[in-house]
Amino acid sequence: MVRNIAMYVTIALTICVLINVAFQNNETPNLNDYSTKGLSLDYTVEDNTDVLSLATTEQEDYEFSPYLGKSFVGFKEALAFKESGGNYFSVNTFGYLGKYQFGAGTLKLIGINNPNEFLKNPKLQEKAFIANVARNKWILRRDIKNFVGRRINGTVVTESGILAAAHLAGPGSVKKYLRSYGLDNFADGYGTTVGYYMKRFSGYDTSFVKANKKAKAI
Image 1 (cartoon, rainbow, N blue to C red):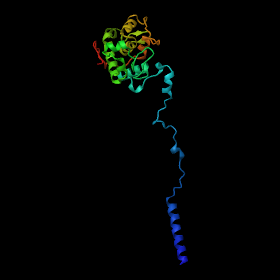
Image 2 (spheres, rainbow, N blue to C red):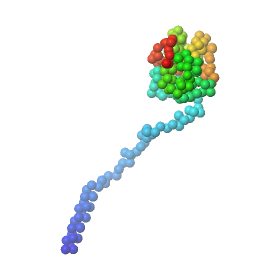
Image 3 (tube, rainbow, N blue to C red):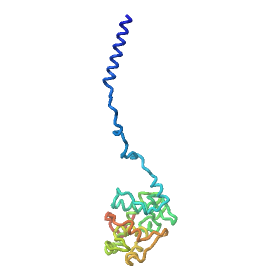
Image 4 (cartoon, one colour):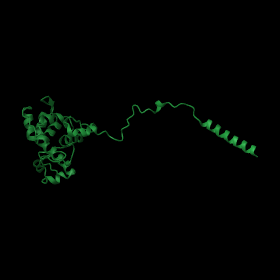
């Protein structure tokens, strides 16, 4: 009886060994197949080091999102970044408000009489930007016709450059700059000039906005 049990145990162990040998892969794996060299492993979390450093560096050196290209959305977002870092609730040291840094006087021209409510309303700020561009485009329509394509202070004049400069300094200052061929180059309180905005925001497609003398945000 004992001999039979021992035989059965031996047979069972032999079967187990044979099954294990049959399924065992004796090939040595090629570790190169599992290399992470050349792979982008940070696609789920962005490296914000460069973004954080913008708080203490010159923002004009930052090229706004290349994915927006030279579209009108690219134009307004690049301008907003230069003005406020894209912050709807920003107020600068001169009291200019919001994402696009509007003064109270300009807001009144486009129908907004309550700066505090304006600052709390991102949707209204976007409408205000469109209305102001439309109004400036009407005021500067002759200058756009006469100067686009010409070169002033080494920069080819474009419609988007004119409209960006008008946002910075007002259409009157842009007229003076163009008609003096760059000699009358207004600078704001931070030293940013009409000529700089002409160059920085050159070549965007601003055809989306139509000239409108009576453009209002509300």
